[in-house]
Image (cartoon, rainbow, N blue to C red; front, side, top):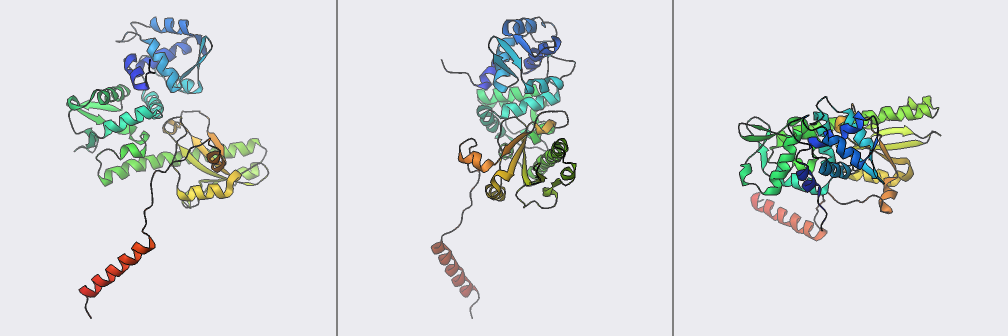
Amino acid sequence: MPTKDLLQLIEETGHVGELSRLLSTFKKRHTGRLGKAELIELANRSAGASYRYPNPEPALMVAIVVGLLRRDGRYILLTETGKLFLRLESDNKADVTREQASLLLGLLLDDDSINMRVGALFRFFGKGSSGKLEAKSSPATWDRLTLATAKILQQLGVLEEYDGKLFLNTVFEPIFPRHLLRLTALNEQALWARLEAQRIRAKRAEEIVLLEEQKRLFKLGRPDLAELVVRISAEDVSAGYDIGSFDRDGAPRFIEVKSSSGRAIRFEWSVREREVAFYYTRRYWIYFVPFANIVERRNFPILMLRNPAHLISIGKLTETASSFVVYSSAHLSTAISEAVSRARLKEWPT
């Protein structure tokens, strides 16, 4: 029997709010570990606490797949991501808060199948008269999987309905990766406005890394070096790294900051960043900031990857091209130059 994908599991759950109901049982019991049968029973006891009847078993599968919970023998354990999810909880434990929705959206976009389905959905969206992204066709004409994807995003509050139309909530726009936003029928001004929001998120991630680097050096007994940590990108965006820092012995550490709305390590880097990484090797680091859209309350560790060039060479990181430079051969360039010269001679006879 084929394994169900994440979209199917969420459909069986009925509503993403079941994740909040399920995980809140750990908070009620003041524990990070529960037996599966006990967890299911406690979630079922919450019947009547909301308009929905509990549906814990498929919700448990979803929570495990996205990394909120994990199995450990006969026990179900709360992960660090699950703990973060609970810290963002409100009094209404049967629905998700906006911050929980942001976290869940990031986790869902880590999944390739969901990413593909959201891309298919966004092809139906474009900028409306209000300036917001809105559905440009009737959902009644969409296929079943696209409708299911839209339903999940509505449950998260990412899509909102007004006067029979679906709109993308602008609060969530910076969470979507650039390649998905480009699928929508945006004009140039609207696209740049949305990319600017992502730039601000990246800047905030760099500021967080700078503070963490200063703390690290203080703990190592090098307050003198902590004072010298600097955000290079503020003055030179072509340096190939964002933060200039140090190892304990005073040797330079070149840090490129990458961030994501989810947890999976996935980022783009420029040709210049790649060149600098391969030049400095062990002195070059990628500091990856997960859940960067909720940085103020995330309290989640920054992932530090030393020598990404080596990690790529041994297969621990996979590098694929996201764009290409196209240039002419020497023969074609000569032919073009001659053609241009002839055209000029015809246009401007002597």
